[in-house]
Length: 239
Image 1 (cartoon, rainbow, N blue to C red):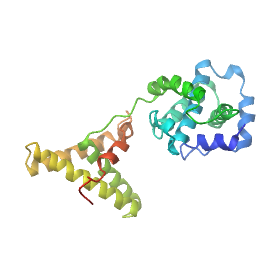
Image 2: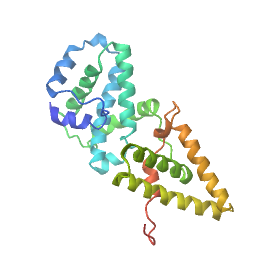
Image 3: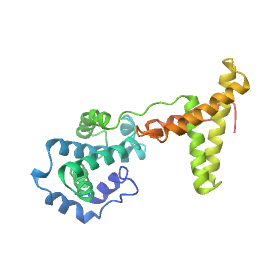
Image 4: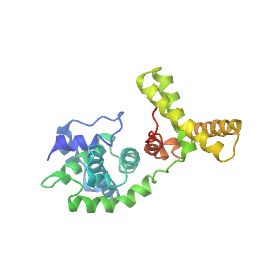
């Protein structure tokens, strides 16, 4: 088993609060779990987590075959948390045991075969797992320009409040300012006055702030990467 590769892949799904277990524990933990501990549904869910870990790793490396699948940077982590929590509660395992089982599954998938999602077997498994991903973590919503204006403004406020005006905060402020200016121009072009445009942007900010505390996924249910695309400079302008 290629444990280092397995841990590297799994690190793309494991939240920072749940560091990967030592490699030597993976096989031992997997062997310690009896067949009666997990239902077929549990095993399928965990095996899909292993598939998502490999594809997420390849996506992070820019592999074209992996990028053909839905982005897993956000949804993969949420899937890992939700599936792990469910298996812990229903099968009586610890989080470490669940994590080690997934590490073992990643190693099994990698053993004797390419981890490249272009590999036919892995691609087939990924396609089979996508319905489970959609059921567990619904696809991200694509926010419009007004929503992105609010999302990046909130992101700036969060970073600035935590770190002060660091380079990261300044970058986020710049992106938020770009989107705010573009949305204001779009609203005015649509017939709003300057004051009405400013009010619409302020209302969107307050609505998104409220939504951030909702239990239905908050801001994380949006495809925030789309906002960065909307903030890209126009070909004939600079900022």
